[in-house]
Image 1 (cartoon, protein in one colour):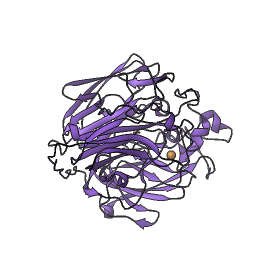
Image 2 (cartoon, helix red, strand yellow):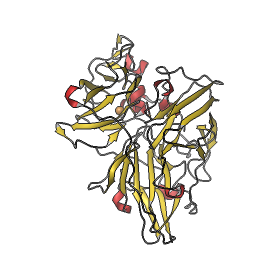
Image 3 (cartoon, protein in one colour):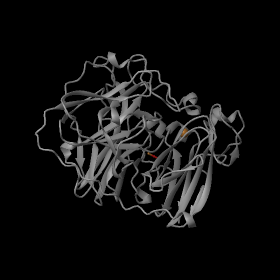
Image 4 (cartoon, protein in one colour):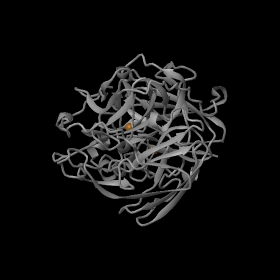
Length: 466
Ligand code: C2O
Ligand code: CU
């Protein structure tokens, strides 16, 4: 699963290191109404003297405002669309009420240009989530329509100062350092590994610095907002432990005994770190030939009083009952260099010449994109086991809407029974990954690859909980 990357804009050419300012994200604490407007904005992504890019943003920034709400609290978002194309917002990883899931074409109509929509939901689980456009996501997310959604425990284990969010994005810049808009929608990307970029930012910035006090314990919430890039990091390089995946806490902080840690598109990892000494510790993305510096952890003198971290309380997710489960199988085919097989799209079998016309080159069980009938239908409360067989030449990041699951098997070997809850899993070429969850959330839910080009090009289906 080695990834190659060609960063032609070398990071050393970047803006001379920004001063070590702690990043104070534009935080919207919910309480009453949050206003979010999608609109075009010009932002500089590369050097201070490079031309600005034409982005699409929430409230003028990419990422959009960080939304912080309390667990169980009601969130009301008044959303306005000032873009020239329809859009919607999906609240990724929230076990949300179906009508608020924000999937244009399945749970709501896309919000037209000039239109508004009111999202109103309760976030049942504390943890690290995010929100992003869910209409033509391959285009809209690539242009900057995403932000962090943090659900705080009622009695947070880390105060605001010790709770940092790092939204990481992989942008494709052109030679001038602007967002490469011309290559959006390239069939080459759609049929291969998706839109991979050449420039990584954290909270929209090149290599920002986070000031951490020595001896104090911090929570770093890493969110991968990339269209298709699987990020690779090594928490051991800076003494960090994993405390949560995809929003859901582990029973105890875990020291990884392997490297790298893969963070697929849409996945989140929460780390806990207690820095010692003083100086600058780089946080690096290590999938390339040379590490790419994401951020600097600037370790400064502490107050001396040790913040005693507490164990995160787990959320109340029902455990799957494997003995009485409904079992379904999902065959992934298509793409470059893979098993092509037959592809049915909108009820019609595609000929080879249709691939470029429709852009449909991947299929789940022979069907590209959403069909009238769901992949499966189940009763509310039923345990579902989905065996995902990847017969393609690429790795995929599969996301289940409205539910968290456990991985119960990977290519024939069973895994820890109480493995972490996730909402997105990676499945490598010729690998099989089997997940289980209790379908306790009624409605129509997507199951798709979160490599957004793959989803657009066919890797997208739905299931019905009735
Ligand atoms: Cu991040 Cu269909 O979603
Ligand atoms: Cu994929």
